[in-house]
Length: 193
Image (tube, rainbow, N blue to C red; front, side, top):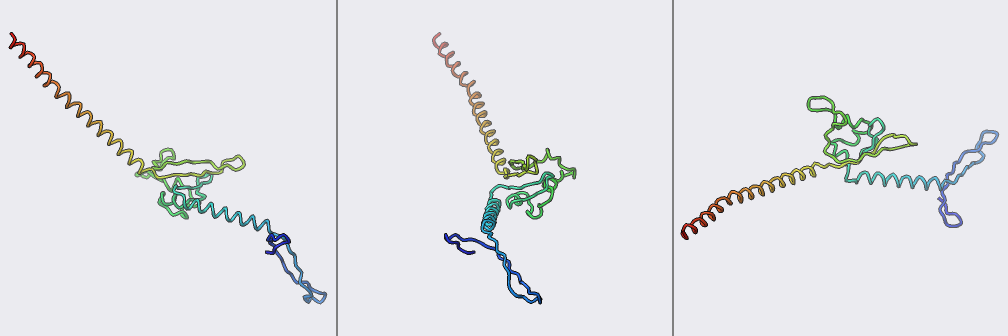
């Protein structure tokens, strides 16, 4: 790295090689120098982007994985591996469906459309030159959410049952009150007569 006349850092690649005289003795050293500033800067930008991508995948709170057109894992972030109960390295290059939803309790395979997955997910196709070459799947565990929904439904049922019991008790108390009022009215008429 050498500063130019404007103070900008320029990066060069120099190759040195021996030059031989007619007796095959080294008589000089030759050099070929190429400026590689733009290439080196582009490499640094690519490395920074790759580090940023890796950091995003590693710290994401959702599971994220990619798969090729045949359903084989191309990448799996740590959260996806955790939610799926696997190590990410064990999933790479393998068909995810067969590993994640392989069989029913009786050993028969799960058809893809019948897989009971307690997750909420978004699958987006990956397109290259207009052709689908795979997909990226982002998912999260919703079992806690489902449990809370079940508890809310149960609470709602209990509240409705309580309202019905209160209404029933009120209705059961009404006939004796009507009878008492009617009897009191009849008693007053009889005393008048």
